[in-house]
Image (cartoon, rainbow, N blue to C red):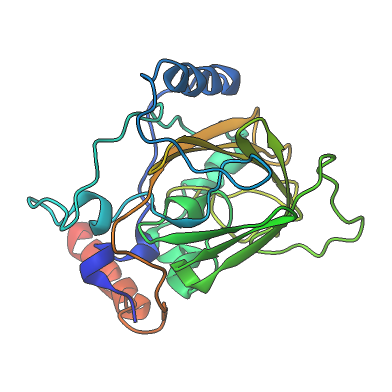
Length: 278
């Protein structure tokens, strides 16, 4: 079952209402993140390196939840040093007119994760549950507590995908190193996941480029550039800061237990609307 004490509020709907207020070009957003990282003071706690000289990202990471932020009004049980970097404010997704109109028709009950479907990329990285990175010279594997998802990311400098991809919830991932940054190219998605918050749909033309940039031993800057000519007017960039939580590891996740009862929630919403109409 879901570890509520460690992960806080229901992860099924954790990011369902996150939408920002203003829009800036994707290149500007990337520039802000890069500029913030470049202004950091000398690193007293560097990321370890593998035998081939690459940053060793192996270990447990988490974007939020009780392990990182503590219970409301209380500090974490194992507080981390303050994060040396904050991501740029999340910008609204630049939808085409048809997609924006459709987005507004959804409620939280339409969230694919409320039906135990996989969150997709980049959404899963921001879930308030840990993920574990296993790094080798030839591939990177990411194991997510959230929805028991996993990704196998072979490393090749050309970022070549198979020519025969079946659309999938988590897409098809290939990666390469750009200096100390792990770059992951993801394509081959179905159109059933949401990108971030409420109603953030996309089409099967979705293409995501992720960048995992180590800041120090316990901090990773995560950046995802999202392109979808089927639903977006231009690329959209989203960022998260991943921390290395103390005494936390990926645990079993069961989506059935503790789930919201969508059928009864829907009935309650209908009754509320009837009262308002009267």
